[in-house]
Image (cartoon, helix red, strand yellow):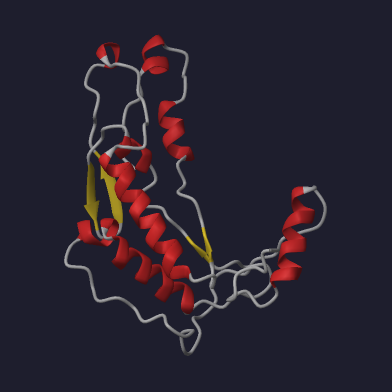
Length: 182
C-alpha cells in the first residue's frame, strides 16, 4: 500500500514532491515559522493534565505522546511545513543510554558525567537493553500509537550524542566518550 501521508498535512503531495526535488539538489522547500495557532485544535487532541514533575514531563510515555498530539493539533501546516512529533528529550539523550544519569528540569535536561577516568573505561556498547534506551523506546512507541496517521513521528536526534563520542585524535577519546551537559 502506498503511503498517503499525514492526514493533518493537506498539501502532502506537493510538499512531498518539493522534498524529493530538494534531495536531488533541485527546487526549494519553503517553511513558514512563527504562525499563530489554529483557533480550535483538530479532533481528539486535548492537552494532557500538567505533569507532576519535570521527570514525568520527560519520561512518561502517555503524557509525552498526549502533549505532542495536543501541540501539533494547534499548528497550521502551510507551504512545506510538516506535522512532526519530535522525540527529543534533551540534546544528548544517547548519553543516558551509555551510563550518564539525566537531570530533568521543565525546559531542559542535563547529563551527569559518567566517566571519571577515560583511560580506565571499557569500550562503550549500546545493546538496546539499557534502562534509558527502553524508556525512550516506550515513549517512541506511544507517540507513534497516538499519532493515528495524523502526523509524522520523527526519530530522536542522537547526532549530537555521536559528537560526544567522536574521535578527536587522542587515544582516550577513541575508546571512551564523556557525557556533556546537553
